[in-house]
Length: 226
Image (cartoon, rainbow, N blue to C red; front, side, top):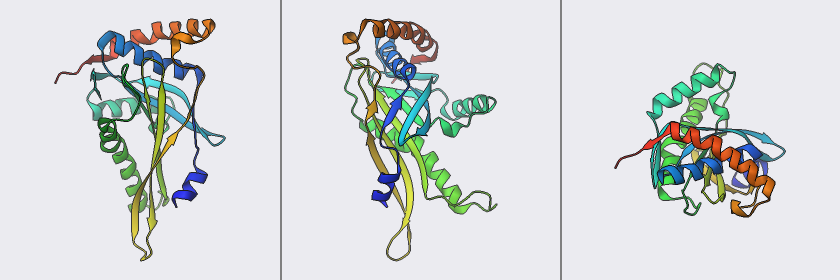
């Protein structure tokens, strides 16, 4: 099953020019203004064997150097879902969680793994559970739940990404098993980090995005106290 999924699933993540610039700008602004991390969601679609992120949003949150939390997490998701539903957009389209590591490396920390499993994979598990045990007959039985895309960025413009799928399969005795498949994805870039070495016209574009995004960061990020 793992090999079949690997063949069928997109194997890279592409960011639009604006999305890449805005993730960097938010990461740099949070680091410069608050010495903190920052996070949000990204809208994902699948195109020609790749995941494509066309839009991001910054959540209202409390942050510090090594941690960030959405404001009133459950209520925030409900409000966000209601707002985008009015625009004809499903919350399921926002299946990328992105966050920053300040000026540190972009490797996944143990805290990142806890967030992925405790917050996002639980919703995927509930989705898979619903497909298995739906009583109304209108939810089709699905094998795969996901994907969840997770991207880590920093103020230097470095980025790394992974995707997680939950799927079920039967063992040799016919018992159903729930499995997690994690794939690390190359990120298709528009710019080459570090961002102080890029072309002059790109620098101008990034500076404009930074000025815009930093104002949003000021509005949406607060201090997370220990």
